[in-house]
Amino acid sequence: MTNELDPRKIAQLLTQSTRQLDEATLSALVNARQNALKRQSVRAAVFALTPTSAHTSARWTDRLIPHSAQPWIAAGLLAAILVAGTSYWQHVQEQQIGELDVAILTDDLPIEAFVD
Amino acid sequence: MQNYVVAVFLLLCLTSVPTSAATQSWRSLTPTEREALAPMVQQWDTLPELQRHRLLETAKRYSQLTPEQKQRYHDRLEKWSKLTPEQREAARKKYLAFNKLPAKEREKVKQMVKEKQARKAQQPASGVSAAPVTNQQ
Picture 1 (cartoon, rainbow over the protein chains, first blue to last red):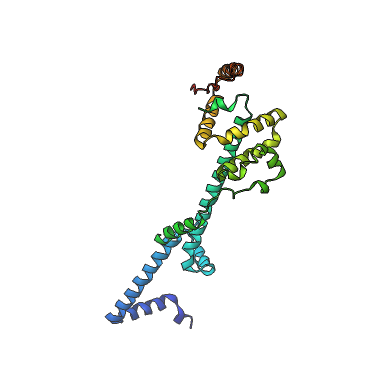
Picture 2 (cartoon, rainbow over the protein chains, first blue to last red):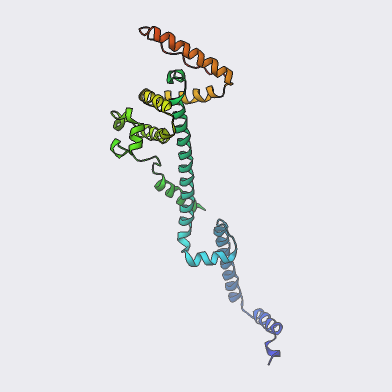
């Protein structure tokens, strides 16, 4: 029984069977393989933009978030980071201007000395 | 990739609301802010939003000032707020440039300004203002 389940024998049998397939079936299989490879390459390009490019991460993101929503979520995160960064920069700028204005308003020299 | 670019653009359009503080009326100010900005009570509600925001920034530091500085702050506040935004920006630049001068140079300039002020006080009808500090860099 164990001899019959030898993987090498199974492989040989499959190879022999494949050779016996007719042209139409073979070309259908080739087409199916090419289509599958095309889909695979598109997925790889999409997930290359995510922080972890491991294949497993693609699977869990697919399970958590619908594929169509992923660009929007990534874009939302990017936009949030940009808005937060700009707000922080503006806040720091305004603080510096405030400090400078107080210094001018309380300096030994009158305002006229700094105004044309 | 195109999807990402379009999505980022649309979300930025949606989120790019003005980040400055909302307009604050005189009534909504805290007692500390009102004390600091007391000379501005009449014109406060007519000031542009950015100017109010910047004056509020200065008011935050009011409590840390000495009594003498508080007096100067109050005396100058109205004149300062009457300047154009360009004049205020130019004054800031000039102040920064002045503070980069060596201490000796700064003292010289201060002495000159004080002398001019004294002369002006003696001749109130002349209408000559103190000479502006020249950028000596």
